[in-house]
Length: 263
Ligand SMILES: Nc1ncnc2c1ncn2[C@@H]1O[C@H](COP(=O)(O)OP(=O)(O)OP(=O)(O)O)[C@@H](O)[C@H]1O
Ligand SMILES: [Mg+2]
Image (cartoon, rainbow, N blue to C red; front, side, top):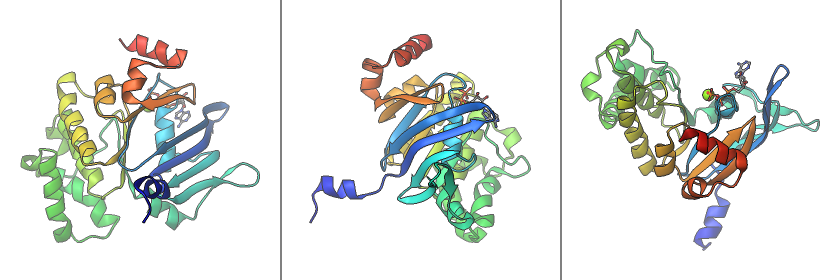
């Protein structure tokens, strides 16, 4: 039987991004970004505005296409370089199958305004996965209970606070049973008193060993919940280290300057 470390080495990373390049016109916004996430890792991505954090996240689940590099999700290749160094994607069906393993939560909740909370949560499992309404209902209710919103199941999003909307958005993403959750500044549109409830929900997910990649400016969250913190600046990944080390002893001058500016 293989030892624990051998067994761990044999398991594919949940996310492998290698040398990701992306430009918008003349503006190269990702200049060869590489990052690997193991199962159950919670990685916080921090960095100044415009450094490419959102673009990187969006490239991982094909909301943006990459120009060069390799993306492998749970051992399955999404995109890889051809002989000329240009990224080539796998066929559409395979691409959709792989991207379905990633749930994403945005800064602006993007709930369907004309659907109730419950309808928002069950919509994609029914329309995308073809699951029957009766079959998804218990799961949806369980998820709403988990995010503390079962009593709001029949409310429309306009009647919810920002924090409640964001928790519905999280429940909605989880209803697709993703293996990986990507968060892009999930609390930055919220009043400070509402961020706590969303961070608690994310904390709970982390405790359940969900693999999470979280773009955030919540240093407290990064410090307490993230296993690793990554600093991006100018389209480059400058530093990636265990959270405690990252904050106690940042190595790169740009990281130090950024952390100083956050205080
Ligand atoms: N769809 C797009 N078309 C053209 N340029 C874009 C597009 N999306 C992003 N950019 C540019 O790419 C760069 C990186 O943007 P990105 O949104 O990834 O940064 P960010 O680190 O998430 O910033 P913030 O902290 O403000 O959210 C910026 O210069 C931005 O203007
Ligand atoms: Mg962003």
